[in-house]
Amino acid sequence: MYQYAIIFVAVCAALPAHAANDAELQSMREQIRQLEQRMQQAETSGAQATAQPPASPGDNAFNPAVSLILSGTYGRIAENPDVPATGFAMSPNNHGYSRSFSLKESELGISANIDPQFRGVATIALAPEGGSSVENAYVQTTSLGNGLNLRMGRFFSGQGYLNEQHAHAWDFADQPLVYRIFWDNQLGDDGLQLKWLAPTDTFVEIGAEIGRGRGHPGTDREDSNGAGATALFAHIGDDIGASNSWRAGISLHHTRRVDAVSDNVPDLPGTVDGVSNRFSGDSNTYGLDMVWKYTPNGNTGMGSLKLQGEYFQRRQDGLLTYDYTAPNATTAGANITDSYSITQSGWYVQGVYQLMPRWRAGLRYDRLDPGTAQVGALNSANVISNHAYTPTRSTLMLDFNPSEFSRLRLQLAQDKSREGLTDNQLFLQYVMSLGAHGAHQF
Image (cartoon, rainbow, N blue to C red; front, side):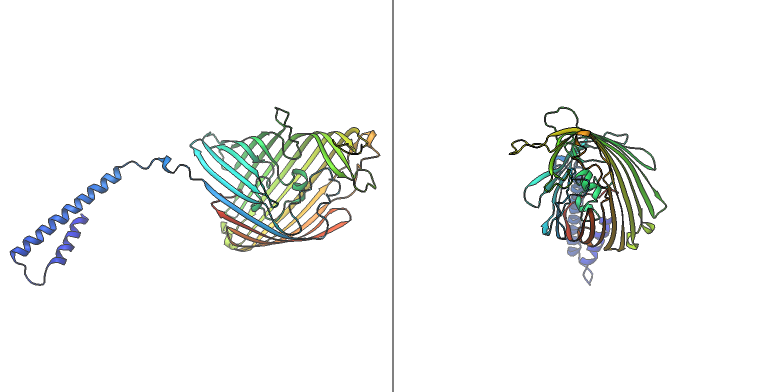
């Protein structure tokens, strides 16, 4: 009916102030007829356009989300960062920072749906010293149903809470001590991961992994066809009212170390430069994690609080070769091999409070337990079985977030992880996100 209203308006606009003669009336009728004809043609064209099928999905099927994370730090560190934590000299010392100005690891991420059954994700890590490495590269299913999801490729393990998070999502500039020592910052592997999400109101997730075992504490065995590592984990969580939510988890990781060599280990009391030790044996790690979040009525603009903590205990059993002679070494070592087993643990607890919509403050406390080693008789006089020291660290953080894509951070820490060395540390950090980036996990 709207066309008649338009015609009426057109007619009224065409009427002169005086009475029209017959010629003028005939001309007006012809104009109205032509106007009606054009409108009918327009309606027909519109209907035909509407009836056309939509564009083929293939016309724009390859449209991946691309993101780039840029990060850098300034570090002021009192003590030599290369000195390992007391009692953990045969573990990694991946502190993840350096003195002065440094370009931290940046990430290039690409993700997209492949077809209705699969989705692909790749994250390329750009190292500060140059070069790149594949951090994540996996394919996951999207249509298995029944709450099942299968992941294939290279990925961060689902054990614990922090492990699956990329560095730009951390609440502090570095990882807790237990992650540095136990997982070489993060546990990643090549393999398969299967998760099951229960069809319940309460969040229940159970997962299993089987992999190559390339990530610490395993060793990358290129000459083996079998799996080098397995992991099991479970998470449960829920909301409490409109303001509180929580998640708790438990995990188990098993792998085997084969001919893992650690250099500059101060095994013999009084050793100046340390020795090289070699270890082969089983490694089993148990973990517990807990996260609680408080947001008044779900409104982050009114402030929020996140508390989290994780605990890991690892037992290693096998054979240790003291003063191992490396291939092509100029001098021969003692090469004394005997049994070795040790149980070590570590934990952290942290809280992050959102002071205002753009400001956050955080406090973290780390603690490690080197344990007491059971050393075979042949090496009882060579290897330090009990260091009688508990490494700790306290960290304070303040960050400013101009938007969800940028973050500026100040971090102060007092590191007492090395006996006799109190390391007061200061870090300034920026983290910037460019392009499309998926939402972070709980």
